[in-house]
Image (cartoon, rainbow, N blue to C red; front, side):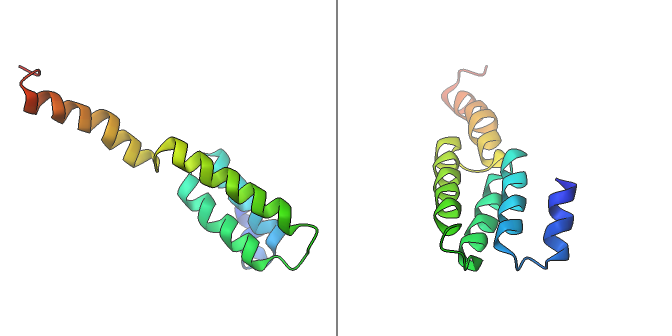
Length: 95
């Protein structure tokens, strides 16, 4: 992650392939929302017609994963932990 971030900073986020690599590092560490943001940036920056389809396919994969995960980790925590506890308490099951 550190190397990808350093590379991103050095190119000032202006090189599609480096932005793609940074997005991948974010995605692999569970930061899906951030990964989506930077993968979209990589697609927008891409001038290479051979690379663009690969970047777009990666973006689709990240979007699909984000939908399957149901949002970011905080949203999942709230929904599955706090939300479930609140439902039990309101229904009287938590007595």
